[in-house]
Length: 239
Length: 239
Image (cartoon, rainbow over all chains, first blue to last red; front, side, top):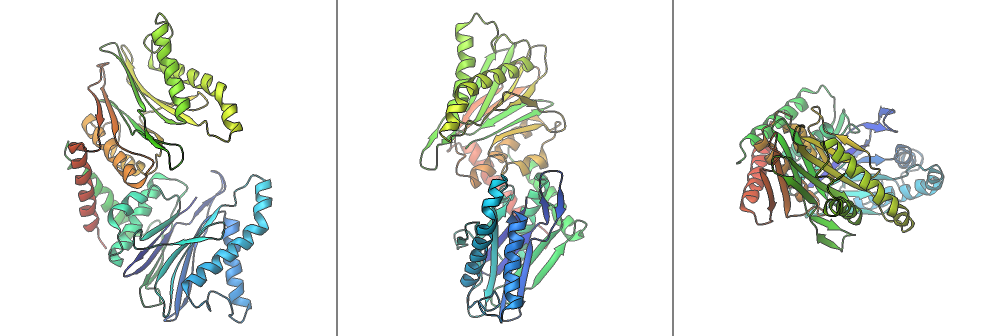
């Protein structure tokens, strides 16, 4: 499985993904699930993926090949709005599913896949979309400033408690890391390292694009501090 | 859905269940999912159920009818050990599934159901079992002193962090209530009121059998204190 989470805050966008994939329990591997495109000041787009890896890689390859081969017409780098970007991802998903859905089903294999699309194009707002396997998509709004894909349940309670659209970017980063930490502790199919991307509103340029390794001292300190804080909070609860 | 959690601690057993059932999103109701049998000093048995309500009610009815109609031979109240009790529940599950599994499947309906069985029979130890839809079962051991059925993911991180077999009963009660609280906040298919049962080791008599209503002031105080403690802990995290 996978766990990816995205925040759309007033101050900007935060995306975090793990890197574990598994085909059954005995075939575990590490694959990047976060992809970014940037033209500083013009546009910055980040995507994270969950589900059938062949499907999501095929979608990413289609999007990238369009950029590499065309004269930039109708690609992520020429799309006039983030909504158009989400639509392109949905269209690519539909094409890939159209090619493989039936043969996967014949083999009783799962073609389910989801892609979160975050970014800002100059002149527009920062936006966060979730593209489904059918190619349709939803967008994060002020009522629910986060979206999740993959193993989302373990990490949801902390988000429900601390994230609103007014949450500062720095707290948003902590919140997604702690949401991931809860998931890592409770579910073996989600694993380190992590990929973190932060896009401050209005800049069309990532302020953070970072891989966080298992031995990362900051992440471990945060994780340990959180465990300790939770245990303290627990022991302070009224009987 | 449902969320039920059971702890097997050195000091005894704790069981907590919600009461919400739903057939689809538009047919939500309240049903007791916790059932207890007690002969003070001799035996105390509690069960919580999840899954297809007709299936789990049929299992409970079979077990209760055996008690009401037989001369107490081969019933929960005459079983010499908790292991034998778990086996009886598994046998009743197999019979009920045998009767309905196929017709449910023909209608594309789900016969999945699980039952947690906790209790102590005089002369034996407190034990906690999870009976599956196939009638087979597992038992909680010192490595994992808790079992969960239904919507288990939201409430797992807190259990993973604070519960060991050495956890005192009073802390165990807090832990299951907070685990339930996280689930209630993040998943609409789990709902108040709650049923809580506590069985201190060696007494074969429940010390607590209590329904916790939505307006219960103790539960609300605990829930609010936990939210506040989490937010404080969060704001104290290092950047």
